[in-house]
Length: 112
Length: 112
Image 1: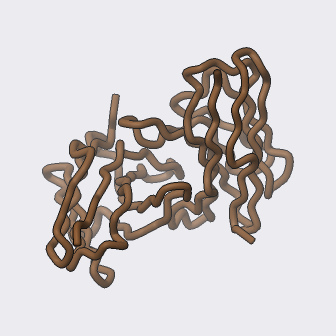
Image 2: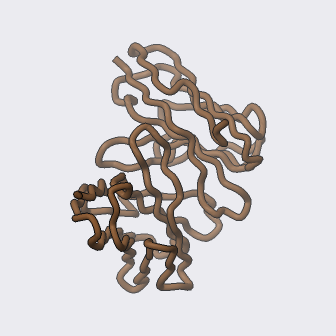
């Protein structure tokens, strides 16, 4: 099994719908992150969490919310999806030593 | 404001030759730099890193060079192999920030 698992892998949704992307990890890491990847823009940080009671906005948090249900689970929600949220979404984890991230395989989201 | 910039969207190199990927940054608080490699349909994977107290770090065929005065780092791959064809992301972190800022990525293609 993968260390960081994202579900679903692909999703097509309609404008205005609520959608949740889920991330779970078996690394035992405290830090978890959500990024989106867009062509020409690289990876941009949406939200991050250093423990269950700690949630922080990243550089592009508008239109998104998150929930850290447990140390191992970090979900990203789009309350009312819009077409410019079409992107590849990645969850990542890191340890206290911050040796870098472990990424999930990504969720490709299309909003039509 | 793009704090980490990879100005070459793509690079094509002959197998066996050297590949040089470049990255510039603007934030003088960055003190830790990483390179990630990404294949299609997979999440980015950690490749190599360097701390600001060093100017070079080597791991097998991969070497990262850091020029702090120029706020520039580069990744050298020697010799280049077909399996090196991927998108490469440069990333940076400021002391205590515990999160990474990524560049736009460079697509490297190794030609046989």
